[in-house]
Image 1 (tube, rainbow, N blue to C red):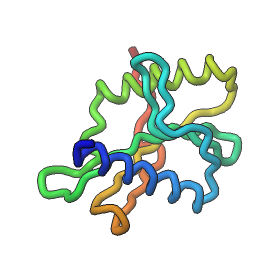
Image 2 (image 1 turned 180 degrees about the vertical axis):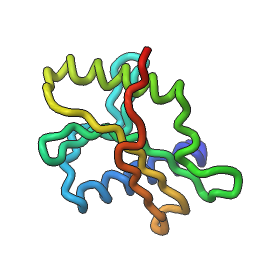
Image 3 (image 1 turned 180 degrees about the horizontal axis):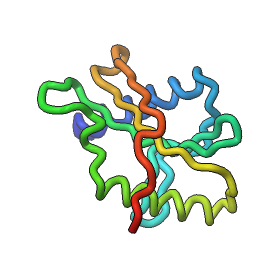
Length: 121
């Protein structure tokens, strides 16, 4: 497996563990339906939290969260809509980003709550 894939998996695992320690209940990791994908879907305080995880070894060129473009946000919102319909969930939704920087076992995690709102299409 390519280094960026193993790094990404380790980052998502670290993010999920962080969320669980913070009182979130993880419903799905790497949920997929066709070409749609959500990194982490969790519940906390009767709110559905959709988390985009971005992992990098360093921040020399840019911050991990800067990789969440408008196109990625639109795809995430569409995937979330599909998820809500598929599982018949009627709850408020929040979109977060977790930035994971470093190497496995030595990650720095930044949790950005309400990182974005669904854009108007």
